[in-house]
Length: 321
Image 1 (cartoon, rainbow, N blue to C red):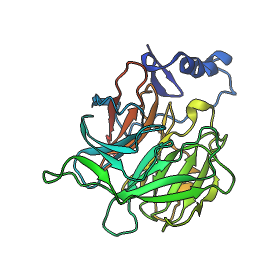
Image 2 (image 1 turned 135 degrees about the vertical axis):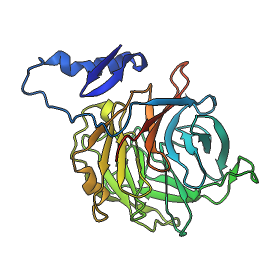
Image 3 (image 1 turned 180 degrees about the horizontal axis):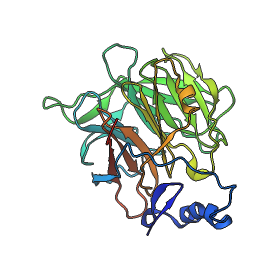
């Protein structure tokens, strides 16, 4: 069964009963002609409907919470599990097949919720940033982001191993502990951004470049997102900035939001205050991971495993730019 709610196609065979009830509540509560019902932004035609690129059959990738495209290896995506799992990152290809896995020495996976890629302290090197930023109960006084050069995969190296040189960026918020699942790297400024999850108006925090790895950073609260979070399924659970810094994706459990930066002077916070476009998204069992493809020709999404379902790697191809 398929319906459209707020202009987003929802595939009901993938939804939990709780999510189905939540999605139907607005239409059940008011008539079709009720003038108080807000009109949602139209679904953008810039990207195609999803294509199933393949299943992620690796049973150890069961709680994928983040995904990002490699910038040093062709057709490679990086992903990871969330809370309580090993401190590992996984390389999969664009068909969902596992290529290798790397242990991050000295790291702990308390609640890894997102992964990002971008510049870092050494010019010309692509760095991966793994965000141990989940905090469901908002009890942790500080959080960690692990930063390290992206592994190179080629015929001369083993596809996997141990990352020995990861740096730990320890941070705390100026307004108390928070839960978050979205980590961004702005390639134009090299600043890190974190978007909070459980607030009525999501809070955006910035860690200006260069980020210290020797002392705890007090993150800067840039401001609150002016888009009210309408419920638990609309909370931001992942995001990515394109490698040229021009395009931003933020996803919830039920939609993908898109912004395009027109100039280099517009900050990520200012960009998020603008009205986003709604991109195509087929709701997944517990979809938290989203990332641009290498050349921005589209975006990938990946869900955590739910029950007997095997996570599928979906791709949404750009039709025009």
